[in-house]
Length: 165
Image 1: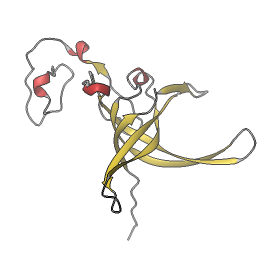
Image 2 (image 1 turned 30 degrees about the vertical axis):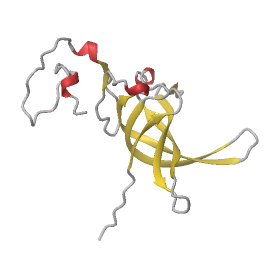
Image 3 (image 1 turned 90 degrees about the vertical axis):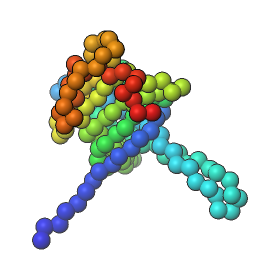
């Protein structure tokens, strides 16, 4: 029987800094940023509620246009996999780093409860993010109709009435 394994990460958090895009010598875009996730728990000794924040380094390949939308404080949903690697620092010491290589990125919102004006789609293996300002999707208050089982089309107009919260 063949053994199976899973390397899947799902994170929902806020960006700790603006995303930075650099290019490899062959011209492939590599966007990096960090997100914070916080869990709240009740201290069993004192009975007080405490927050514990973890920071995650994210790497997004082949998505040079998305860095403009990934600014400090924005809320994002990330799906991807963990990857560990090592490198030698400037003093010749070997350093190890673990990061999340994102396969899917969804821009959710930002500071102050502002809604995200972008739409995003899954990236698959090779990966590319489709980010589009709401204004480029066609204005107006009416919504194009589609069958419930059909994939959303970019010409569908999303209004505030479509948001469930």
